[in-house]
Amino acid sequence: MLNERFSDRRQRLLRLKVMREGGRLPSSSRIDAPAIFEQCPACGEAVSKRQWADQLYVCPHCGHHRPIGAYQRLALTLDSGTFQELYDGLCGDNPLDFEGYDAKLEGLRRRTGLSEAVVTAKGRIGGWPAVVAVMDGRFLMGSMGVAVGEKVALATDTARKAKLPLVIFCASGGARMQEGILSLMQMAKTAEAITRFQQAGGLYIACLTHPTTGGVTASFASLGDITLAEPKALIGFAGPRVIEQTIGQKLPEGFQRSEYLEEHGFVDAVVPRGQMKSTLMQLLRLHAKGGARRG
Amino acid sequence: MAELHTPAEKVALARHAGRPGTADYIKALFTDFFEQKGDRLYGEDAGILGGIAMFHDRPVTVIGHRKGRNLEENTRCNFGMPSPEGYRKAQRLMRQADKFGRPIITFIDTPGAYPGLEAEAHGQGEAIARSLAVMSELSVPLIAVVTGEGGSGGALALAMGNTVLMLENAIYSVLSPEGFASILWKDSTRSAEACDVMKLTAQDLEQLGVIDGIIPEPAEGAHANPADVFDAVDAALQKALRQADRISDPAAHRHKKFRTMGSAFLQEPGKDLF
Image 1 (cartoon, each protein chain N blue to C red):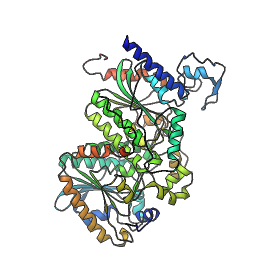
Image 2 (tube, chains in turn blue, green):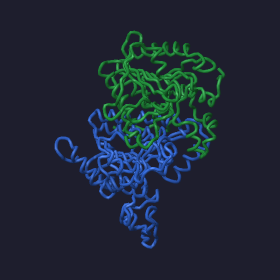
Image 3 (tube, chains in turn red, cyan):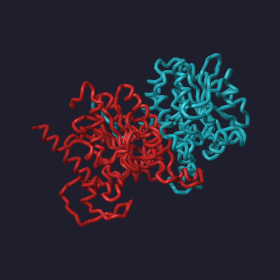
Image 4 (cartoon, rainbow over the protein chains, first blue to last red):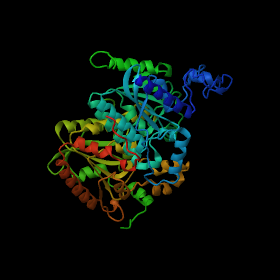
């Protein structure tokens, strides 16, 4: 009874957070606006807002996967009523006294409802308990500063101590420039935490979403025991513009996209958003210890 | 103490063509150097030089970025910008050092990992990430010396040291000042300004707790009197090795060190829920 009430409250909280970030859950009939259309940024087709939500923000015409907010991703991934946010109060500072950075962080926190570019949580995926971290591109392009590194490392430590699997949805422009060298050091911090977790027998599933680049690609995003990617996500170390400038030629079509990485041996499977949860459930079942009995 | 050089001048000194590089340090400080080539997976990258050598009668594994001394060497070494093959070679050498109980000494001097088409196709990001994972696991001590340019992830991929030292005029940063200015201000010509705000000098980094010590250079820079610099680096490495020998668990020591990088700048540190 009490459990049900908690579960209900958790789900309402997550729903509120999704609304706050401007997203909508499938068939959330609260705001019916079938007549309001939004163009697909890839193919230009008009799709109703309701349909975007029902299709998990995947274009029904061309299959383009639009970026979604961290809470929305959690709502799509976790079983209803199991979302428990971890370390939500933790945020960064302005270590280099970089001009305008404080105000920028403050504004982003107000606008997005996020405290930083990653949300860490505990919950269940098809009944399987897991620690999940989700990066959010709206917060300074999902860049990794001290707080992001710390939250990823803390979530990893939590998974290690509780002997839970770890799932990270990556989406990042790379290192947080405004935090300089300290953001670079977060690559070492997160890679180290993941390595410890894996040495202890933990399962880490990395889900690469658009875009995953720079210091995040060169640290925890590339260290999954299993690596999944959403279709056509840009995944790489250097950005395409930098590469084109360096080599002085245009890059081939599809370069650094999920399918390209799969072909080159860096991704286990390209998984459309609609199948992500069932794929995660399958993987968690395959890694269950002592027979597949969900807790 | 007032600094002799501005950050922008230090950047120029760190990039000076005559500045001693990894090959020079190996020649001057080590004996019996045996170079090991190739990653055993795909290729050999001359942009990273590594092998086994004696350091004061003690076998060590030594690895560093190599820029090359003349145009032909520069081209062969890709100006010290390694490809994934270079990082995978370094991983192989580090694992071997671990197996045979040799301490690892690295010299850091790179503008960054190479941002090229093939490098991406071969998994530059994975190669750097894996290097960080390998360094996390090493049971032997690793001592890194930033001798010139410590450029981004390509530098860090050899620099997760129990001790990280820096030459007085070396630099170490998240990105080149030009790249930093271009990303944040959309204007790469403002790089001098970037040098001032990035905190990329040895003095700044020591204050931020990113490095453990500074090795002095001649006033005009390391290229002015390499012999003195070799002596200073030699002494600093001997001291660091003596300290490292007293660490009972180098992996745990590195964990503690890198786990707390930047933690002073966090608000409301997370509670441990378990």
